[in-house]
Image (tube, rainbow, N blue to C red):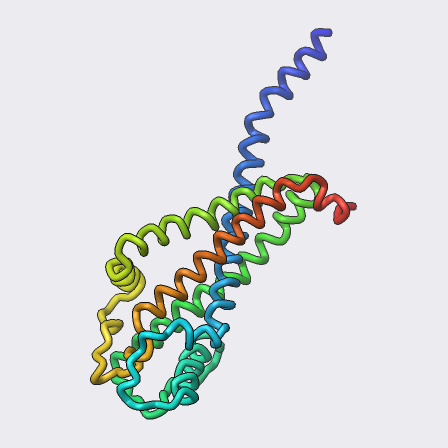
Length: 232
């Protein structure tokens, strides 16, 4: 009938709006999920202190520190960056300039600020995940998150492969307002124990984990009915 045709036409007119809403919510959730995954993986990589010895083979032990003292200094640095109230940063048998102290404080502020963003991100992601994954059985957000997790490793990884030193410098110029990150080994000898190869290895591991997370999410997005059992 004419009324049915009118009703159908009205429904068809609503489809673009619904499709836009689906894409918007899915992309928003995907962005939040990828940000949470990045913060989690960053915390895990930094927390794995056992990675230091194999990743820092090019370090220069100019101060003749024992292996235990070297690892303790690295452990102190990691704890300073990750703990909410770590106290003052000091190193065994190694001096530190005021500029070096300021730079470590800047790095800590950057890391802690990133972690603090996870709480509001998680608070927004949880209801969106329930709405899309459980209520609507829509896993498009996983594909968005996989895309975000894959895009940044490819972008940053390509820059690192082309010229790691320039990428390293660009990163510091982007996130720090001063040049205190240019350590003088005579005043901040801790840099002798943190060679560029160490940062390259840590960054490479983080990028690899992000790629694996992207693959896992894409696989989960293909599984049919994976969230249905959590529904009402």
